[in-house]
Amino acid sequence: MTNKEKYKMAFSALQPSERLSWEAERMMRLQKQKKMKLAAAIISGCILVGGTGTAYAANVGGIQRTVQTWIHGDQTSATLEISGDGSYQMNYTDENGEEKTIGGGGVSFGADGSEHPISEQEILEQLNAPDVEYETDGSIWVYYQNQKIEITDKFDKDGVCYVKIKNGDELLYLTVKYQNGFAYSTKCYIEPWAFN
Image (cartoon, rainbow, N blue to C red; front, side, top):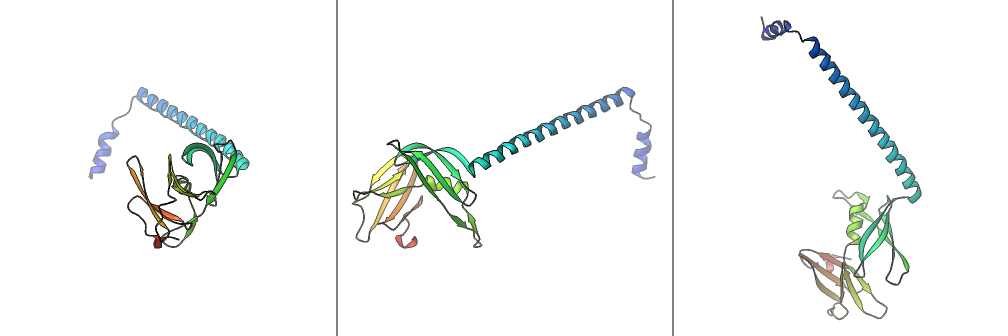
């Protein structure tokens, strides 16, 4: 006789009491009812969210949210609309009360050379990056969060300017080529020949 047969024979003589059997059935019914209620709630939630999301997407055409961003050294509330193709549009009111719109976007390239629209995270990083502005009066300014740094007279004979920006514990090394772009890093200055 095998062990399996021995166990079967030993436990076949045991019978659950009527009360235990009834309690087990009652518990199984309650669990089934709870699962059904949970499933109904989840389906209702999906229908509600899905219906609202469809109406929202139909009205807006993309992801829209209110964000806090730094514009010219001032923290500003803006409405950011992100489309599925990696582009964005941001609307805000400037310090003079005028409605302004800026936009941008682009694509990223994977290690295998594949191209895809930039993600929402990359767009937010782009919005929070330093910015260099050439003013009509000839002055040149770097804006980064609440900082505004004039760099007009800091360009060398090759038209390159190096700026170190300290923001709390964070350090940014900014390399600016006069009217030919800029690059930054948290580790070191990027060589002018390495970009543009």
